[in-house]
Length: 215
Image (cartoon, rainbow, N blue to C red; front, side, top):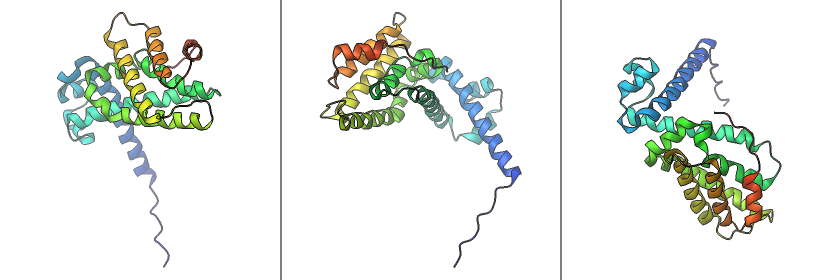
């Protein structure tokens, strides 16, 4: 028996969905801004006032403040990841493709300052997206092992330890007024040593000029 044909989406419903999505994205961006200023002391009223919308409108998109904050953090991470991927795609060097995201993560303060500040303000929520980064890093290490460009016996362990270094490097850039971008690259070099990459090669990979990444 033939299946039922799917009901086509009407232009009106399509426009409404696009409108709702635009409003949601605008709310997330506005929330990211106020979270960076207010931190954990933020209220739904603060968020609504900053976004110039009614409190009731916030609740049309999110069930409560915690859900909105969590979504904002995940959105910030996804926005950063998309920007980074656009840079990685410009390189043909397999090791550069590994190192560029690491360097950019450690210096997220300079490219996505509000998101970086919220990584500090809501440190506990890092657990929601760091495992994804860690998994991607582990898979990448395995690919480089297969290509004989690395010889890392325990990719999962290396990825976990490297991601810890990178997370604290990123946070140090935000919280330490004396921190410099060079310090972020020094942390990346330490992380690369866990993969058996020589000091000379690590320096070459971390001292090359990074393409411009705009927030």
